[in-house]
Image 1 (cartoon, rainbow, N blue to C red):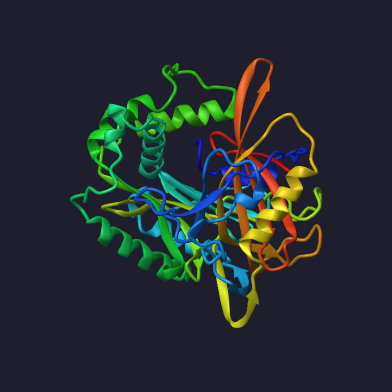
Image 2 (cartoon, helix red, strand yellow; image 1 turned 30 degrees about the horizontal axis):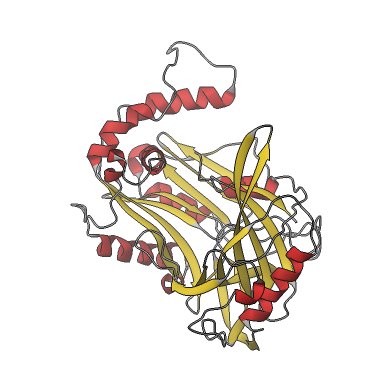
Length: 409
């Protein structure tokens, strides 16, 4: 799938050098909440045609009151998922039979498969379970999400329709309760950043278009991926169409979101230390959660908390301006957003896997950059992170237009 499972690819991606440049445009304070992309944080948006960093401040709040002056710093531990939790998910769908643990996988990845569903626990803090229907419905969502707003096909993604088997409010209530019951995840620390209703008409219309146009039914493909894709098509093409909810859940503490995408490398490039993404993908049907992808979730230690003074937002903007002034390149990124977000900083030594984290507030800057290569134009999002307490830059990384990580500085 195009969008899901990408966090593992992020961790394995090769880092390349990133050069940012240019001046930072002015930012004015607006709410970043919307029905589809709800981010419960204070966010400053860019105004156009500003060429000096001194203009990056909210005219309504020049004293930086658009951001808090203090934040808590927490200790966190990654939730350790177990084989027993995964097998419990299989048990909710007995019609698929008994799951079998598959060999030939590394010790850190426990992969199980039944006749119609599969799942794995990886490194203890990555959890994945999906039925064939769940896979199909995620593919339908991905297919529909590619249409531009205003396209007639986009009507099949609804942000307000209650489906027959459960209202949107009831579905979200059930999901939160299930996450808490099954995995010990505190429901108040998760919010739905995307929450779509998809009716069975869309599934019926598009399920035949989701796979390759042609397979040779009697041919066994030598390419394992093609063979698995053909087998999935054969299994899924006759699945009944059903209504479903598609939900992306993100994680927050003190109403401040944790940066969801993950960072390949923090500190000096090549340090071998990264920050995992915290976004989760879910499909909820009349049968329950048929697609779960969590990587990872965190337990917050409320007994070990520090209250820290934050550097003023204008000071952070000045740090970004200084960074841009010192770099030379032929492209000029346009900063369009600034947010205060938490990042879970691993407490491991270099080269060691970490389950312990310090949750620290960071000012996160978003910029658009356009580059030409061999006659083609490419748009990127450049994200830069400054520790909101110390002012130290954590990292700067580049994302392609479709959201894939391209580089880390």
